[in-house]
Each structure stands twice: as C-alpha cells, then as structure tokens.
Image (cartoon, rainbow, N blue to C red):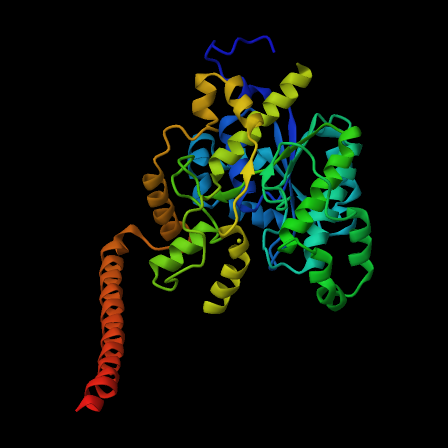
Length: 424
C-alpha cells in the first residue's frame, strides 16, 4: 500500500468503496454492530443480508425493524433511513436450510457482485441441541464456503469463530488446530439420525468438549481452514462479546448473554452468588472493538493482497462454570500487528485497542445499557429502582440477622443444656 501510515488519512473506510458485502447473522448482536459500522464509517457500495423469516415476519420486515433499534439512530440521522434501506439488500434465506434456502436469482446476484463475505450466523447457546448446533454452526459454514467458492469477485471470506473453539488448548495461538472430529462425517450423521437419538449420544460425541457450542464452532472452523487452499480466508476469533464501549452509543446491547445477564440478575436481586474462580480474569471484548477489528482485518488482508426464572439461571451457571473456573491464554500477535498498521485517525475511527477504556466507567455504561435496551426502563425510573434496591438490601440483612440469630440462640441453648446443665 502506497499511503504512508503517518499521513493522517483514513484508508480503511475508502477501501470498501465499490465493494459489495454479504453478511450472515446480520440481525444478531455482532451482525447488527457490524452493519452499523459499515454504514457509518465506510464507503461500502452494497450490503447483502441473508435473513430468514422469523415469528411470522418476513426478511424485509425484520430489516426494517432492525433499523428501529437505538443502535442505528446516529447513522440514520447522518444519512437518512431511505438511503440506508436502499444500500442494504435483503436476501431471503436460512443458513440451516439446504442450499441456504436462497433462490436461483439471488444466488446469481451474489455470485456476480459480492467481493467480501462476513459469516457471523451461529447459535451461541452453550446448551443448544447438538443436531441444531451442527446444522447451523458447522453445516451452515460449509454451505457458506461452497457459496463463496462460486463468487467471481471474491476477495475475502471472513469467518467469525470464537476464542473458545479449542478449549483443550490453554494457550490458543493464531493458527489452525485439529478439529475434535471429522466435520463432514458429523454433518452426515446428524442429517440422517433422529433428534432423540442424537440427543441420547451427545455426551459421548462431545467427549472432553464441555458443550455443543465449542464443539460445533471448532468443526466449523475446520471447514473454513480446509477451504483456505481454494478461497481467500480470514478467521476472526473474538472472546466473550459484550456491550459497546462507546460506539455509536455506550453500553448498547440487545441480549442478556454473558456478563449482561449477570449484571441484570444481580441488580434485580435474583442472583446472589455464583460459583467461579475469584482470582481469574474475564476475556471480554466490547462489540464495537470486535467489529472495528473485523474492518481493520479486512483492510489489512485485502490491502496486502492488493498490496444469548431460577431454572434458567441454574442452567446458565452450569454452562458458565467451565469457563468461570478455567483460564486460557490467547496469542494476539496478529491484532497487535494490526494496531501498528493504522494511523491516528484510523485508530480513532476503528478503535481496536483498550487504551483509554476505564473499566468501572465501561461496566457502569453496561448497566445503563441493560436498563435501556433490555429491560426497557427509562432513566426517570432510577430513583424508584434505587429505593427498591435499598428495600431489597434491608430485607436481605434482616433475613440474615434473623437466621443467624436463631442459629446462635438454639446453638447456645443446646450448648448450655449439654455442658452447664449437666454440671449442675
């Protein structure tokens, strides 16, 4: 690339000029954030969104609903809703369906125009049924790879994997690892076996793998690695993706997965304790950092080439325990290298480092975001929420005092009768 790193010009946004991008999982948490980032910060020509019909809503209606999310308020104000709707092309389809459920006309459209693919679609439920997880995380990835191989202008297939795809590795390097099984054989097996049979043998199939998520994501990654000899591939491995740090709004989220669920549960007094390693560290990644890293990684790759009440909580803790009580180290030389490749203006627009992030302030924003975007509680209700919290605190202390008082009273009576009364 000819532009000097210190000339202060944004090279990442313009890189998308005249390029057509296909995104799967666009209505998901990270997918929404990626779409917003591309629309606000790059010069992307078209964004094709593979969207399925859900709960009676058509793909087009789901796209329109997506733009009503607070996440898109800023970019809508900047560019106008009609402009954004014109820039985003809905492709009706389903990653779990044969041939992705795409019509011949739409497939031709993709093959002729798309140069960048971001495969974000996945089930992130740790306790997902194995068959469903395989069909989405593994077979869905295989079908996307097959589509990518047909694209005439393909410059990059970006696969959004996870840092937790190979949990047997305490130090995960930025390189491919052998899968826990042959992905193609697993796909064939779940395709012809009945659901109840697959459920019955799931634990045996998983082996040492703690859940279906990690297992099927590892298989999916293996499919992508296998395709590296045929298509240009970049694998992104984000860790625990959490609410936005700052872009475009602080604390934005659309789900209660991971830390947000814990924050809400603790704030509402439902969760009182959690079994975990208190000296461990949390590998979390604000979603705005994650999508910025995807954009920077794309620029770097193409540029260098051109140059998710108590039962649910209990179940949730059960699947979290493995992660909360183990630690891994992840090699991040690649992302460190990316940081060195971008100039100051690009670092501001596409932030991928933790510099300037004040952790307490960030999680305070996460709490505010959970109230606004998940619980749909207005800021005006904060005083009432604080009063409720004080009442809950008093009730907690009173109950504990009564329990402890009763215990020591009866223990004292027992001890007196046992020792002193016998002596008299």
